[in-house]
Length: 163
Image: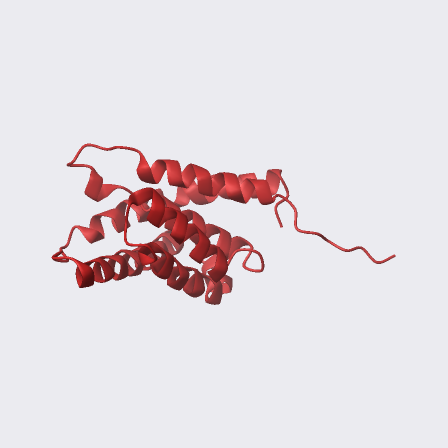
């Protein structure tokens, strides 16, 4: 008997991205906005690592366009950067999955820094924005929160059998 496995649990993936969008646009005090974790990038990285055959560059593009619209950013700014992050995540997913949580968090730091620096560079091309060290703050908080986000999304993936 030949069993065909169909993708399962798409609603969990969509719901996790919706929740990350809500966290990304939630108002914060001005002093804390530079430290906001990059929730959208972290959720995208998780799904690219966990199920790279379902979530990849096209998902990064789609999520990025929605992120651009929600943040009133240049259309395509986050789409391009999240595509690059998704591509790197999919290419390195076998390595990153084997890392212990601390090394995974360091990998997330690097990926979020790439995302933030590319986004700031694209924004500075079209405006008078100067890239500063504050783009690193969000990557640091993303790195700190990664182990907990990883465990939450992994448990959701296992509970609802997302494959």
